[in-house]
Image (cartoon, rainbow over all chains, first blue to last red; front, side, top):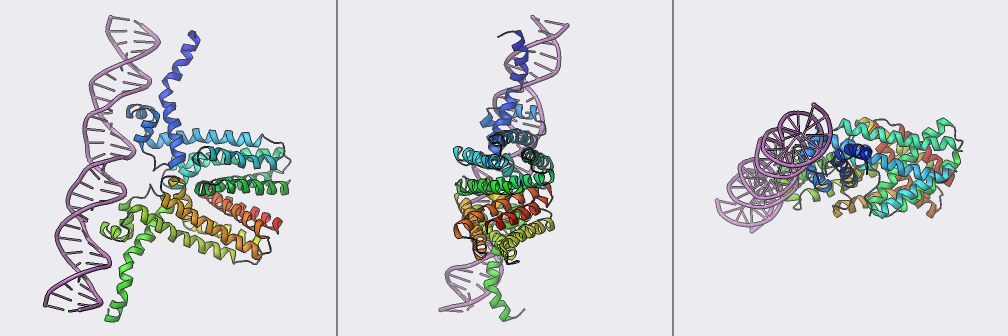
Length: 201
Length: 201
DNA sequence: TACGGACTAGAGCGATCGATCCATCTAGGG
DNA sequence: CCCTAGATGGATCGATCGCTCTAGTCCGTA
C-alpha cells in the first residue's frame, strides 16, 4: 500500500517460506510424531525445497521440529487460555478446557490435539533439544492453569499441585479419546476435574 | 544335555526366537515408538534374523508390533493388578498404582512405562491393527480399575466413569513425569485420584 | 536312512531416509 | 547497472529402510 508497508512486508515475505515450514511441520508432528514424519513430506506439505529448509534451519530436521513444537505449543496455549477465561469459576473453566479440547479433536477427526504428546514420548532420551522444548511447554501450561486456580481463591501450593494433575488428566484423556475416536474420556475428565477443583477451593 | 531335555526343549526352542523377538520389540516400542524402531535394531536386540522374523510374523513389522504391544500390555496389566490389590480401600489402591508406576519408571530411568502411550499416538489413523490393539488394552485397564471400584461399593455407573478418568490421569501423569524426568506428577496424581475416589464412595 | 516341515542365515532388492552441494534467481544499495 | 547477500530449486550422496529370496540346518517320523 505504501512505503512503510513495503519495508515491513519484506521481512515477512522473507520469512514466508520459513513460516510455511514451521506450520506444516507442527501439523505433521502432532499427527504422526517425529520419526513418522519425513523431511520430504514436510517439504511437499509446505511447498518448500531442501535449499530453503537448510537455509533457515542449518541443523536440519531436529531444529525445525523444535521450532514447530514451540509454534504448536503456542496454539495449545491459546486453547487453554480460551477455556480458562470462559468462566469465572475455576472448576467450570477447567471443565471447559476439556470440552474445548474434545471439540477441537473431534472436528479435526482426532488428529489435532496437543502437539507435545505425540512427539515427546517417542523422543525421550534421544533428542535433548526436543525433550527440553516439550518440558518447557508443559511447565508453561501448568503455570497457566495454576494462575487461574489462584485467581479463584485456591491457595498457591494447592493450586500448583492441582494444575499438574489437571494437565496430566487432560493429556491422558486426549490419548484415550484419540485412540478410541470417542470424546467420552475428555468429557468425563471435565466432570471429574471440576469436582476435584471444587473440593480444593 | 540329554535326550529328555532335547525333546522337551524343542517346542520351547522353537518358540524361543519368537519370544525373544516379541520381548525385544515390546521394550523398544515403549522407549522409542513404532517409527523410531527399526527392524534391524529389533533383530540385533533379539539376536534373531530376518528369516526368523518373517517366518513367525509373515506380515512383518506391523504384525510383530501388534503382538509386542499385547505382550507389553499384559505387563502393565500386572502392574495395575498389583497396585489395585495392595489395599482394600479403592482410593488407596488407585494411589498405589500411581506410586508403583512412578517407581517402575524411575528405576528404568524413565523408559519403561505404559507400552501403549508411546506407540499409539504416532500411529493413530495409520495402522488400524495397532490402533485397535491399543484400544483393547486401554479398555481392559479401564475395566480392571472399574471392578476394583465396584468392589469398594462404588455404584456401577460411577465406577465405570471414574475408572476412565483414573486411567487418563495415570497416562497423562506418566507423560509429564517422563518428559521432566521427575516423579512428582505421578505422586500428585496419586493424591488427587485418591481424593476423587473417596468423594465418589 | 530318507524324507519333510520347522526354522535359520544373510545377501540383496528397490525405495526412501536426512543431508549436502551448487547453480540459479531475486531484490536493494552502491 | 552491477554487485552482493539472501533465498530457492533440485540433483545427488551414502546410509538405512522394510522386506524378499534362496540356500541351508535341524530334528522327528516313517
